View 1 (tube, rainbow, N blue to C red):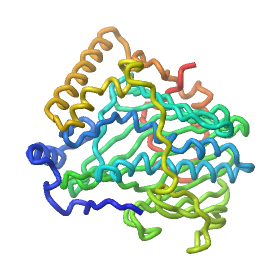
View 2: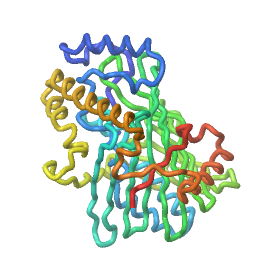
View 3: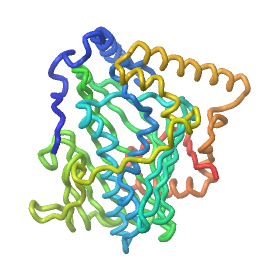
View 4: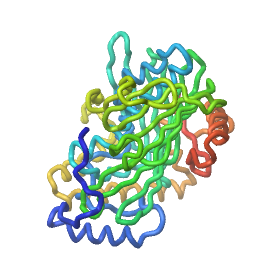
Length: 402
């Protein structure tokens, strides 16, 4: 397993570019005294990634064959196992791949309202094509909506995700993700509610941030089954960093019929029953061996001005050339234009929903999928408690426009 060489927060500012150390000191000082959601803060440009956060939605499709295989399970137990395996396969790209490739995690651009991202994974005759559509559905608070579908396999998911963050001593950031994913298999009339993990970002002082997962996530199947995935930042389960343990069981029985255990950024095994004994389990997933499939994107010249790659092109070019002053100026220009549009919407009596093209804001209580969510949420709350799922208090729900 490849491991980060970052020692959480043990050194000083040696990793930051010399010209940016004052900026980093000021940022850390602001973090330490700031109260509230950190998404409102401006991050130093050298800590910016050259991608939009909206593009992270592509990690749901990193392993299109595993996504398509969910519906291939013959029993509800097997389909939940396939769903759990696919979900684990999304974690490496979402939370570790950038640290592995660049040696550190960087902050992506905050997507603007109505920003769009499209991707496709062309499959073979057996797998079929997988298509992703994503849009920034809210700016205050920041929330992205996404839809992934493989029509041939008969599997689709739709969800939204927001993030709320706070400073955590010493010099780290804790992030809890709001929102959820609903995965559907119409052939079996099954819906799966999937919750999102909490993040711990460490290494801010060194200028080399890295992400760890903590807490638990859940996959609740309408067929009467539950997967509980517990994360450990310090190797409690396997002795390695980024370790996890997943147990699959019926709603009404605490005894697991499958258990998977290992490292979500590396290899894990699974076995029947409540434990995975050393040397007896079968390979569940190996993030190092089963590499993500890069998505297919259309040429930037064919993109709409609101598509991420085109929208942020000048900022991305400046960051890649380490021209941080230009990056900051261009980023500010885009953000100021959004403030002007927001003011104009307010004067017209319009809401953020009026700016959306790909998704539409729906009434959860009157929406069929919203009702399915409410039923599964009630069951999850009954089993794991009210903190098992974090949602915006106003119950926002978005659906793909038809």
